[in-house]
Length: 413
Image 1 (cartoon, rainbow, N blue to C red):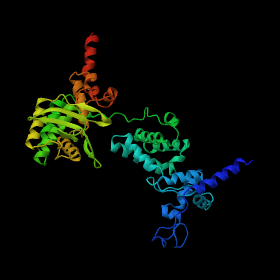
Image 2: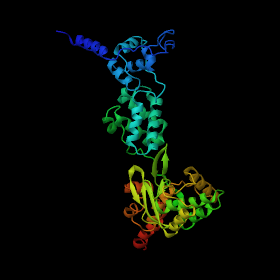
Image 3: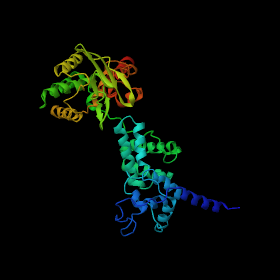
């Protein structure tokens, strides 16, 4: 009876015969210099597949068998026989340690990047996660992702804590994506990669805590729009942009991302067409459906009359046709730049466009609208806790007045 070792050797030989043998040299390549020591002549099978000895050595150094190496390299390079792998593996220097220079070129990374796109509707978010994993790999791992061990994960988290203390949440989310794709073990998610307590503290926009923001400060900002040295259409659009964000909570959004139409929120709004669809008929707005992140759909059902009038006038004045975007002259980058210029001119705290979404929710709450209702109006929030924690600036805004109601009733003697 054959021993287990003999059976293993026999199987290995049969499998090597079954795999594709080294192909003949392609026409015209006979004089290509070898990357593996030969001086001219017919290129080796590795050269024809674009593989270097180091590619095999790197995987072998991680303990992968010849069969596993063949499977791994065939994903991106093409089929290679076990005999060829065994040949170059035998040439691996004693004590060789895996060395990688490029994250993007490693086997499996391309598939991981494609998987991220299917899991994140936002291309920007997918790219950010991919880039973050690449940073961790370059700084800590530099080894095949398939060979990640628990200690590698611990080393990565220690590096993040030391070098990215303010971004731990984003790095953990990125590494979690890598584990979910299939690298590492699922139990690491709960054992090492919880996000509790890792988010940055909510950013408080001081200017929104002032009681006169809507009464005095915001009107000054709007008046300054028409003092900017920009085109008339940019002024008309910017005035609407600031008002719409403050009155409806609509996010900045985007029309196109990397050549792909995403048609989200304000900059993604098109007239009578698209995912974010502003229905305009008979000289007036009939409906506004907003496509938001995470594929959420919101309706802008409430607009102040003054803003609705200016919106109608913009469409009519510039003859915006069906299928065209609402905002055309003002880019997102310029919108941000113009708002900062205005804040500098008025000598007030620098505002971001997204801060006006915080102003929207804060204004609703200051006006007495219950938070449970406020998060449902126009472009709201699915998670009331997110709204409460990150968007309502009312805590600092009217805390003194609210506390006075308590002391005035019970502590007057």
